[in-house]
Length: 403
Image (cartoon, one colour):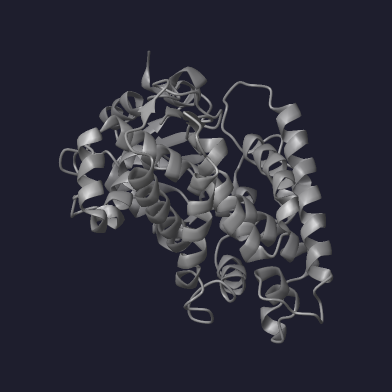
């Protein structure tokens, strides 16, 4: 097979359990590899890092020379802030950050530590005397979705509805060269619209009656310059809801799977729980929840490592490949929870670095520390486990363990 088919092979579901040999092939083929569909893949660390910090690289799909097919009109006309460029990206991101983090709410995430610990313990208590559990359905999904719903102010009884909506939105955004995505895209558009309408209605009920949640903060904002329009609130709220738990589900699940495959390292972390923050950083490098950024394009012709990527071309930054680049990381194929030099792409980099990175880190640290101390000596029922369909947000769909 030739290098110009790498995207098709990486996104082929058959390679979901282990795409890393294909990433090695990508790096070997060159920093920039053109595909048969005219897109460009970049899989080497230093080139990815340069592009993530290059103001000439746009996140706005409206700048693509050939529009992506199947995207809903809503996403084309009013993209989320993560799909916009500055200054509009910075305006909306700053507004979204006001009730969530520094400088306006600097203690918001750390104040959740006790609540996250309590939810974690309650979920594990609910395992009861069961001898087998599904880490995804029984733990890794309900933990972050409960946290993000409480942050936004979504009633607990509505949480299951969001799983259906979120799954449809993620599936619609996946990369599948040559596959008819019409039905997935229709379902994703409907889910996005229903989520937006729900969040607007929920926020409006709190107008003039503020509560301690983010939707209430958005709708009761006193500063005219920091107010979201109803359309912006719908798009921003949907983005925070989906991104606020989808990546964390994968981080926790990939994390436990990795530790189960490295029992010596799991035992090390049991003995030294203070190492868990470093271990989570290594998991973000070694088995990241986000494998690629598939929607970038140059605003002008850009030269990378001797290859010119033309203005408007589709550019895919293969973050998981960069995380294992031997030119950047020592022994990149080795899982090392004590790794010191670890400037990974687990949360991206540059102006679009993950908005919720601090929360995801905290959730993963608490979740994994509690799991490895309370589950005794769990063992995998199936390895590799069945994976989710998405090649972008890669993680097991189920992770059955005997306890």
